[in-house]
Length: 218
Image 1 (cartoon, rainbow, N blue to C red):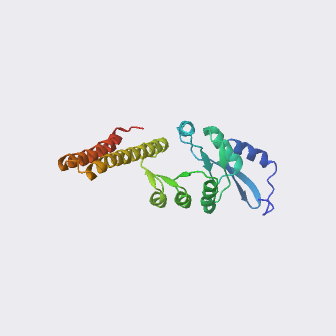
Image 2 (cartoon, one colour):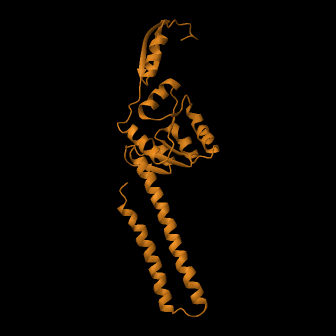
Image 3 (tube, helix red, strand yellow):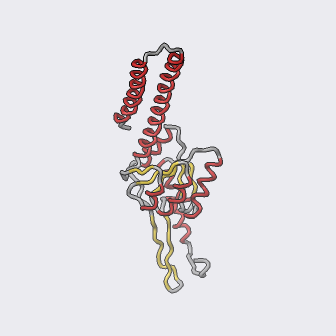
């Protein structure tokens, strides 16, 4: 408006009020005169605050990465409990912001659903794409959350953590069987039938331990 020498009068007061409500304002002028201020706002998902609280309790720092102006972004962040807000980020710069966080030694998981989120999803240590998002985001994400529900984010993280524990347990027992069996076999004191049974039991225990993940319900 200033570049086109259009007088906005005292509209900046109204503008600040809209920002405090978490809304983005768009000026409209006709014939060099300000005719309207249009307020735009994204619908905040009902369980956003609950999910943010859950992630914080899990020891995960939550950041908001957005192209909105700082005041609007901070207002939205305050509503859902996000204190770390990175605002006024152009779509092409989102990946760079992810890189900055990684350089701080953080392991970064990026959640996104739009075309503009794809570079950031690819740059993050792990990209979580919402299943109802753009095809590009879904193709780029390492994990695709099939439901359009933010609550699936902590569930996916918990499942990943549980899976890693199972992998470590399986490796431990597989190594233990071999560490105990190989010295006995080397001395010729291990019956081949017993050795075969031990190997079969080793594989069976690993399989059963892995299948226990089916009981996971978040």
